[in-house]
Amino acid sequence: MKKRKERIDRGIKVRSGDIFALCSWREMLYLSGPRLFPLIACAVLPLVLDTYWQRVLLSVAIFGLLAISWDILAQSSMVSLGQALFFGMGAYCSGAMDHYWHLSPFITIPLATIMGGVISTILLLPVLRLRGIYFAMVTLIIPLMLVRIIEATKILGGTEGISGLTSLPSHWIELYLSLAALLAALFGFRRLMDSDYGLVLKGINDNDRSVMNAGINIYWFKAQALFLSSAVGAFAGALMTHVYMFVGMPVFALDYSILPIAAVVVGGGGSLAGAVLGAFILVPLSEALRALGGLRIVFYGAFLVFFIVALPEGIFHFITRKYHQFERWVEVEK
Amino acid sequence: MFVGTVVYALINSVILLLMAIGFNLTFGISGVSNFAYGAFYILSAFVTWMLMNWIGVPYFLSAVLSIIFTAFIGAVMYRFILIRVRGQVLSEVIATFGIGLIILEFFRYLGFVGIEYSLPVFIDHSFVIAGTYVDMQRILIVVFCIVLILLLWLFIHHTSIGLAFRGIAQDERTALTFGIDSDWIAMLSVSMGAALAAIAATVVVPLGTISVGEGYDVLINALAVCIIGGLGSTGGVIVASLVVGFAQRFTDTYIGPHWTMIVSLVAILLVLIVKPSGLYGKQKELEERI
Image (tube, rainbow over all chains, first blue to last red; front, side, top):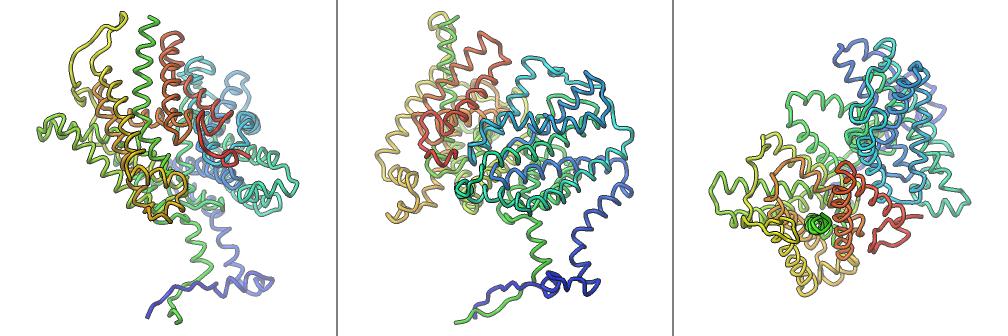
């Protein structure tokens, strides 16, 4: 008597997949719940948390943005090991504009977002043709090299960095600005990836040569995806610069490259929502583990290995499946 | 000064080669990029140290024991973790990197930091070669490395396991049809890579102290050499370690120590842009770029 597991869509999923979704509040809630939940959470959480956890929430938003930026790149066939490049570019752009030209943060942040995106894209333009692990290696090396160059040439403050930058008017603005950016990026890019444009990007990931065959210039599309993703990363960097009121070599640190990848691994790639969910799990977890001191990173590593091996699809896909489908054991027919 | 720089550059190249050879072997045979490589290096050094100072095992016996232990850990890592993500490059990288983090940071947590954590040199003696002092350990490293490369070559080309290694490196599925158990052979290759890291640690670590940070540097150096030479190509790794070794020493002496790392990073970047599979890489053109 062997049994197997069978997965069937829930009735409510089938009903709410059509105009019949409008037939009752239950169906409408089923559809809108998962979308309203992050909105409400982001609006309410800052109000109920104390100052320390508000800082944690801010870095959740920052790492969430970086994870989104990683996921956009990964969905368009570019696996990056160096989100720190985008983060650091944004941070240095806004820091330098603030320090040398004394612009207001509300001008430097948007400018740095664009500039950081453009510079990172131009830096990576020569290697757009590389695939897979080779592209990843280049992105891993560029931030490491930029750090050493800043150290050796002592430009932009050298090893000391630039401190004493202007901060945003209040920490509520910092918090809500970052959360709003996170939500806008999450929903905006999810929509973008579902459109025809996103389809081309995903097509490049699945089979680049067949997309070329369709007469589409994939390098142009890859460059655009690179710009979108690096602009998101640069925004995170620019915002963080004004929060810390400091920009220096740590902005190119490996943390900013590793943590977003870890967030996507834990949350699940390919949906952007998984990336954000991963950030919401990992960043507070690493804060909670801070009491353990050095052992924290050990747990962190163990966590990564566990997720890669045991739940490779990520938490988000697991939850989605449970939400849409139910499972039951059935007998295997002879 | 010039001759001295050349001598030290040569020794530096040999050290780089020793550090990279295990990483390269594992990748060349099974395609697993073992990012826990630096951690294995440090692990074996600490195991040797612990055996010597806590239990009192003689130096050479403890070195051999720690090499066997590290090989065993490598096999365990493959058998229980890597086998589940085999073939998914990114997952392999993240899983092995996670294991490396666990090992290295656990040692840091236990407080294994300081100059008392060092291994003795084999023979304490030094020479003068062309007006430069060179100690016995460095000479031994060069000799040892040459012997090791020869032994590895013999092993790969004249034993049945070596044949199986070359078999799965060429085509895993075809190798399967010839009755080669690819999982078993891949496990052996990961474990041998770990053992080579341990061997490198045994001969190189006596030059300095055992530090956790060294683990990450070893990984970066091994990666640099392997990328420049071409992942999986032994000849390429030898050439690349010479290139990087000389470049590092010469910039260190004539330009300044700040630029040492930049030179090797720029070298990697240029190689990746111009010829992604390295100087002697065997990857096919379409796998690396479109």
